[in-house]
Length: 409
Image 1 (spheres, rainbow, N blue to C red):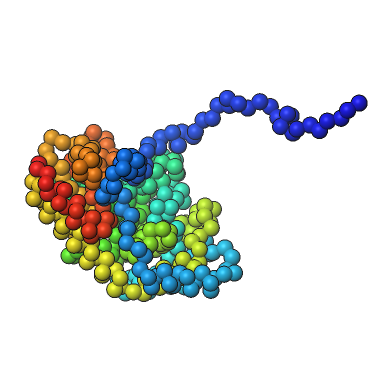
Image 2 (cartoon, one colour):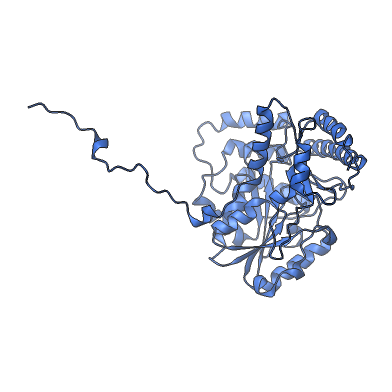
């Protein structure tokens, strides 16, 4: 009798055609706006067209040489360092504390009031998991950073969108939040300097925000990723107005052109920071320590930041002048790397963005509708705007300006 070996796969049940269902939360996700922009760029390139990409806010300038050198040194110095600290290397947290004190005159304890992050996106998305119970509200500005919403939804919270409108100077109208929503709101997100409107918040707004939060027992989460990219008025931090019930999110991505390094930190009320730290230990293993070393080095230098501010201001002025020459209103931002440009009357942001994608123009922007949510009243505050991210080179920016100037609106 001949024996044969049995293939283990023969013993498994047939699974072809198995039904695969996503979670309800996953099913609620739409397309990520900036992935859509990337797809447009890819399509143009496949047609042999080299677009000028003002779509995604990813700086094209190299990370400054002194930061890269610091990273290379740290890579060797940390050759046997093992897993990084979940909450951040003490040296990095101390560097962040020194920077906060120097920049904002806010003195924080790096042991209890600061935690490292893997950039802002992951921190913003994961933070609500530590705070929300199912059915809790989160008050979110729109237009705004998509993870404010998605983090809320995945934590089983309910987003409540407050539009940022020109008649309110692109500040959220806190009085418009219904009493029943405010009473159940655990978090309110703010982002100043604001992406995408370029607005810098006033002291008066911060005081009203804190009064609102204290009245309803709501934590304030302040996204301050663009705090160092400003043109006239120097922005303040929420933390300058107190720490009670507040947490601020900082990033090295835009300040030091370190988007690919994935490093930042949160700071604020030690109770909230402790909750963030605890949830973080269950989600990630921390930013590599050698990257934190390079980031600490970057925090000790302001010259490269001043140069970047100057370059962004030049690009801002070039594009704004071209848009005005083409017949559009002057929408000069006070800060950030974005221009929130009003489109011609009777044209939607998507229609305007598509016009700029014509082969002879080939300029990529982000339609405001894609990064704005429709409010309960049916308003999409991004419908009349497109976002220019000032990331192309100076040469490409000048070329784009000539193309824009040739248009007439």
